[in-house]
Amino acid sequence: MRKQRTPFPILQDGEPISTPVVSRKDPHKGKLRIGDDWNAITIIALSQSNPLKAVAEFVENSIDARARNISITRAREKGSHCLRIKDDGAGIPRDAAGQPDFHYVATHICDSIKRRLKAEGAKGVQGEFGIGLLSFWTLGEELVLTSAGEDGRTYQMHMRRGSPDYRVIRKPILLPEPGTELVIRGILPGVRSFSGEKIQWYLASELRDRIRSSGVQVRMIDRIARAEFKVEPRQFEGRLLHGLPVPVTPGNDLYLELYLNESAPENRVGLYRRGTRVLDNLAELEGFQRPPWTSGCLQGLVDAGYLNLTPGTRLGVIHDEGLEQLLHELEPVEAELTRAIEAQQQAAEEKTSREVLRSIQTALKEALLALPEEEYDWFELRKKGDGRRRSPADSESEADALHEDGVSPPSAAASVEPADQLSFFEHPGPLFSVKISPASAVVAVGQSRPLQAMPRDRSRRRIEVGVALRWEILEGEGKIEPADGEIVKFHAPAEPGLVRIQLTASQGEITCQAEALITVTDTLLPPPVREDATHPGIPGYTFEKAPGQLWRSRYDADRNLIVINNGHRDFVFASRNKTLKLRYLCRLFAKELVLRNFLGIPHDQMLERMIELTLYTEEHLK
Image (cartoon, rainbow, N blue to C red; front, side):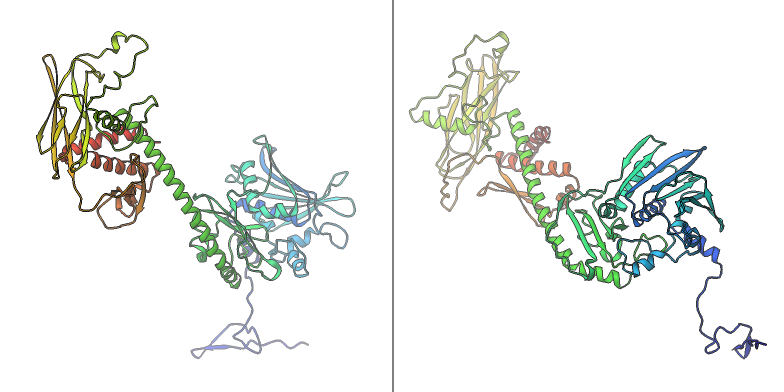
């Protein structure tokens, strides 16, 4: 008779503990085991957090079975929603009798045959945990798996959600079909809303490389929505980056396909393992929560075959030496990607600057065409002979030429012979206002500057005849010749200062007045020799980073540039929105224009001018 083993007591505080002996040699050692097998299976079956991932695993099983065509059908049968996945692959592995070995599939949870195939050198096989079939619990109530045997008969395995039982029956069908058919009936309420289009988009991203490398044709048939889709591998957008410093790893288990795109929140790099997506965004991993992966400028994938996945969901990786190897191998790639992103951002900033400058210049041109030209003479916007109003620069050159002979030039309107007689409404009315062009100007000591009188009626039409003009200097030194002409020349004195000029226009009993302010300047240095004598024109702009300083912008006359402080808090605030930034820059342009055109006038009048110019300019901003 066999001798019965006697339990060896373990003492604790001198008292025996009635715990059975695990090992005769060392009672403090043992092996882990599952206390409740069915409870463990339930936990595994419900561990899949994404039902679409379960659909992807069923499609992967068909790809592993070397299927060439896979169809996924979403339908309603006998009043119940179902999902059918059918392929033309090798089917379920056979047992010794040549029948589909459903018994092995159902009784070897967590012991996948694919693991042994991979250990023997099989390529292109993805599963390894033996739990993919149980994920139907996250989709529906019942699973029916159909496959044919070598005897020409068709067999089915039935499993129900929440039940430990399974049964295999023979399906009465005359001619067996190749491959495998998987049907999930009683689709759960939360999964019924997944349309065929949504399933197609998910599979196109999830199995992108597996579908592309295997050449399998996958169709999504949605009979509920009456639509059909072809699952095509997702195409990335942007510029494919070549020549990345990818290290040569054993077995070439690291593959990169990265595209540089414009910054957008939806741009991300997926993490894959052997063609199957593991994470939608690589930046979700702690070691990659930094640029360039978080820049929003990259699309594509990183495929590392040596990563170890979390068995339950296969939506993450284990933080072991495989992940550490990936971090190390991507370090030189990150440096190259950062340089490419910086170069793209610099080019984008230059393009944006050109577009902003073009928008502001166009808006300023339109605004100055609507505003009185006699008050703004900084920019040369109107050229001779183009059918538009002439700039004061043109008037100045014409006045200089004619005044050399002591003859006052006629007005532009008087010099042109009208082709037809003016209609009644084109004749100007009585005098209503008069202005001086320019209303503000800067003249060097000893130099001269032409000024022009602009009498108008109530409708702003020019009055050419019947108006008596009288020029006089109210404050400061200087001389005006002639004192009663339409276009006169102001001769600056030998000393700098401010000169206030008054113009009085009379028509019968109507009298109007206007004033102009001339700033007479001097310098200790000789003026620079300019190669061209053209007007400066609308300036460009540049940035100078000066955080903490109060100035927002300043005009650099030598370079004809407006220097903008892009470190100012107002600029930082405006940069959050493209439209707001454009309006901010436009107001800085208006500020510099007003400061240059209206030197020496009271502050309240200068603010009025700025509001006027800003209003007309922002109307044309695009």
